[in-house]
Length: 134
Image 1: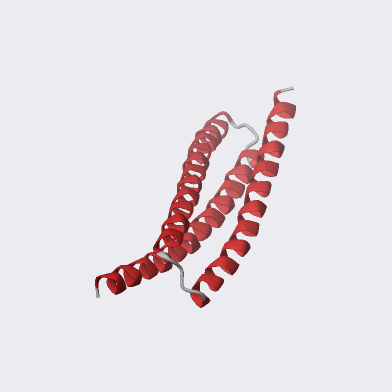
Image 2: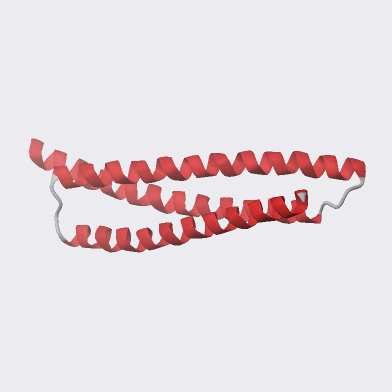
């Protein structure tokens, strides 16, 4: 029964992460379109601040997901070590660790892209502030 519940938990986690990544990539495409449009059309300072705030919130969520992922990797690593000490079957745990690492790499890539967008928006904000001073 323990195996069934752990498989169920793993399946639900996989589904949750899949939905998260799909949603993020969908939002990413929308944001890329918005960012490209923003480059074409000058934004005012208020729009830039709203966009910056939204990007910071997204980064915060991604960092929280990364932290959660890291904790789960630590738990599974300890479980793997215990299984190896007692001679238990470790293939499922090892596979889960690999899946978690893959998810982490995807989140890290998403964070990098988000940081690039944030940097671009902040540069626009700096330009506007310089123009206002001049």
